[in-house]
Length: 303
Image 1 (cartoon, rainbow, N blue to C red):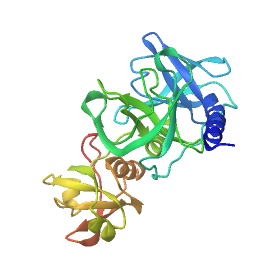
Image 2 (cartoon, rainbow, N blue to C red):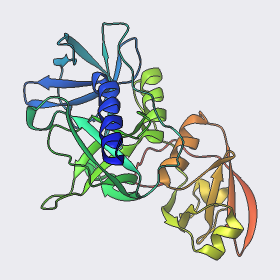
Image 3 (cartoon, one colour):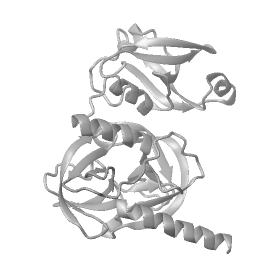
Image 4 (tube, one colour):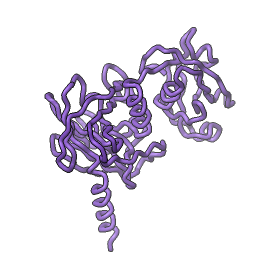
């Protein structure tokens, strides 16, 4: 068997496994896609797909049509969780590890322009992309791909070669070809979990300005990671200032988990439930630890 035939057979098998986990979402203003998150009826989609809607209809690959309700929306990540009254749904495995690599083959599945469960293949072009989302928020962690993503793909999965969701397709670059963006699965997993439990994501803040950065080789060797969050400015009297953060600090980890972008930092703060968080920082080539108690003010643009 040729390499091309083997690749074709593997791709066919992958799509056969993953496509039943993709549903179409319809409402009065249009349609989008959704991904089955749990067998007992939770689905993941984009917040903009269901914005302002109260009556939603979901159609599955086997033709099953069900009404859906919105469990919660998170505008800062453009994610929403839906619930349908059904069991035994084909949930798509989630790749939560932040190890998606540039050049990795991926498949996008969704309902572009109403063509249900359309499939396109491409590669991961970049990770950690910063792009604006709704209401002036900027998400600092998009996965960029050249797999074809069109209107209606929003809410469908980006799938790796093992059939696991590595992202939720979200946006395209206007007037460009082969530039699409997905919310990474590591973000989708924790945001969906919080939405299911609480219905919303209340984001505490540190009162700092910061952004994710790729580390130079020499710095990476000292830090033990390839990415970090650089603190640009610490607000006077802020939680970050009280915790000992300074301009120029590199945040490497939060509560023991690596930090590569603002979303990683926000995840630690949200899941801390109002408790202080431990930050590993790099300052003047020295690794240090700081304990910081975030405040309750919600501002998705400020870490």
